[in-house]
Image (cartoon, rainbow, N blue to C red; front, side, top):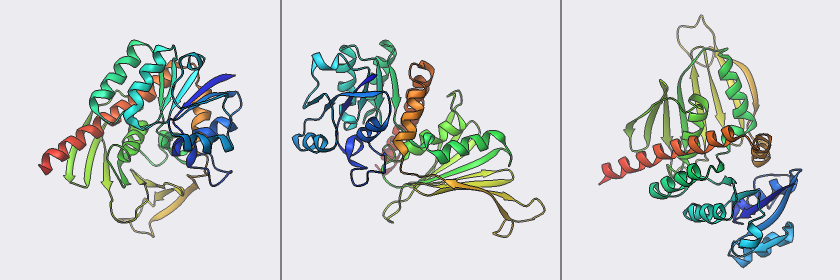
Length: 314
């Protein structure tokens, strides 16, 4: 059994799926459902959250703060607190000998703490997975495989649409673009601003546009991948559709597109899928390094974009 420490009992800790037993959108539910995990300790300073947790879940220890004696026994810590606390929690637990972590995104909420976080990960050889979930959803996994086959040619361009903050919401899609187009993290990225609500990142020669849609009751998020002979579109919470373009058409319209494949991109099991990926790679240092350093690259880009936008507005 792998002893788990769950730090933070908010929405991602236990709340997102509390209304529906069939969903797996919180860490508490994912831990409960996954064979081979023992929830040793759950921690949150809020007594109301601890009380809510105790009505549905069981941990050997339910605490308001990290306890040195108990937490030394943690094999893997899940840090689901607000990002401003991530660095301190990592340091506290690493000092107790904890080596394996799942960290909610973003890594931290500022560049200085993120740099310090990465420094300690390297120094102490920690295994850290950053919980950007989209690469591990069933739909995106299928897209990744389909793109690698190049049945409709190479990717020419991509467009993502999201609402909210560039780091908190946009980071999901920057990380996704890196996963799809530069998962080995060897490529160079360059940023171009088109407008305050549209920026582009060139990733290994593929232009990815990021459209910020705010104030329109717009749900995060959507994506389009333009290929040489077709395109792919996905919607969060809906489906992925793949279309080919008839080669004898001189221009593209709805009559020149042919549906090649459609599959679900949402089954309410996001964290179950993530846990399957993590624990099938448990002990694989390369897997964890790829996650933390892809997240770091995505968040560096997000911080740069935010800083440049702030300078423009000033």
